[in-house]
Length: 167
Image (cartoon, rainbow, N blue to C red):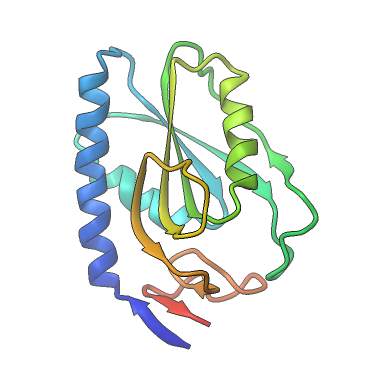
């Protein structure tokens, strides 16, 4: 494995994103606290760090969508855990680990928009250069390579690594 993003680079970028998202929400004019939705399991570390670094209060929820079986994402997207909070009239930020083909994010957007959110923004740790333009905020853009660490896994392992590695 080759380290491509260090834990220090990750923390610096997450802090910048937390500030940008806090400002973005304050400028929206929506008086309700934003709802931050974590796409489990991959975004867990990113989501936790991001929400703790924000300068505004927020509501937190999680969804779980399964699109990968190991390194294979050809079976479609399955909803394992749905949104539980009332999203009506609220600004929602969907937080995911990586934007790849866009299939998982498309399903997440469908779940959130069907609950009458006032506005929905997409936040990802990583975005592939080849992925569709669905991300409002992202930390890093990467090539088309398989990566692990900081929540990203290979058959369920290596999520705990503090840095991001190319496999």
